[in-house]
Image 1 (tube, helix red, strand yellow):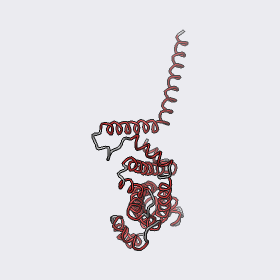
Image 2 (tube, rainbow, N blue to C red; image 1 turned 180 degrees about the horizontal axis):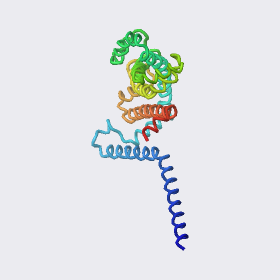
Image 3 (cartoon, rainbow, N blue to C red; image 1 turned 120 degrees about the horizontal axis):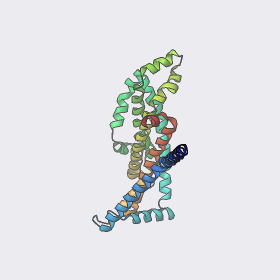
Image 4 (cartoon, rainbow, N blue to C red; image 1 turned 90 degrees about the vertical axis):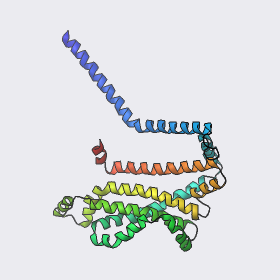
Length: 281
């Protein structure tokens, strides 16, 4: 009689444990999505309530519903679409060029001392130099249009990537490099098998910083010398026309692009370096 009671109790405990495990697994899978949806919903509800109270002049702070309406009609009538496409194309090309230059050169500067001594003063100087100061020179040399915009995006994004990769290589444990050489690895194999995996977090961080700087460079180029194209031009025109809903809609699109790119890089990092999630667990 007692044995049957114990068996029933054990079965109930096992079922509860399985149910709890399944519930926890479902929550872990959708936690980020649920929290994000709730967070954004509260943000826009608070925005709408503040705008309705007219504590801030509606000319400068429109209702969230007006902003979304302006965004919808902007896509429907073709006001936003071509400008968005122009900015995304230029930004993508500029970032690819910056990554192709900044990541390999940064890794080399971190590992080759003479190269670091020669190039690092120029790299640090360009990293600290405000990009807006280069616009008059770039307009003078390249004129208005895509060439100038691409150049300012590349110059904005390449140096954060280079600096992060360079500093990442300098943090590599020397014992790992010595072990690689003992096992017969050449310089190329050391970079691929030892240095690059170790510095991958620095590379991802550099790309994220490059994304932020590249977006700023893209806006600067489109605002000051875009030739009437891009989200920067759309933002500038909305400001000139006191079209606050369109201005905020453009800013929201820029925020979505930025967050989407950073989250995409985090996803790539989780796939390329899964041990980092394990270390944070």
